[in-house]
Length: 204
Image 1 (cartoon, rainbow, N blue to C red):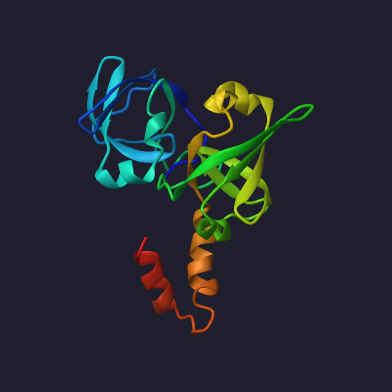
Image 2: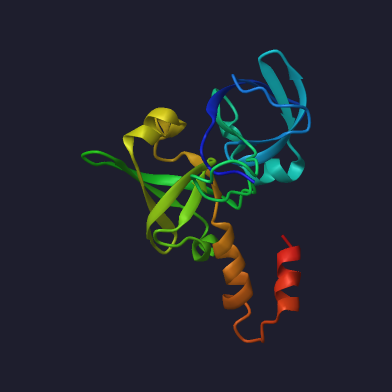
């Protein structure tokens, strides 16, 4: 589990044969989970100043692979003693969104992000969403897109300041919205029991 609060932006050293090597101040251990642009990956090698994670075919199929260059967001997995200041993020990317509009406001910036229509049902006004691993609040939801308002602090401490229209980004919808949809909305015509809920939870 993660919180969606970015630890730092790490530098991509290389991506070869499914192995991504990053340079960072953070020093994980072998076997540790680290979210890279929001995707939960396992550390398989390390050396002074760098660490390497391996990307499975499923991960490569799901995330915006073209962004694994330059710098990426990283966040170590949360510990039970940590404060939960973002929201509960699994590190399981649901889909790829595309930035379709950026609107600068007096003290913030609005980003409009389009996603495949089947994922809109998991995105809730004033709910939480993770964009490239960053925990953010949804302001508006439309037929196939949503609007975020990003404050200057987030722009200054993440890669959001470099995002442009047309960029593809990793999207993880709110875990609880997905659970509730599958438990109640998707199954509204059949009786819900705890056995049914347990079966649904076990499928994730």
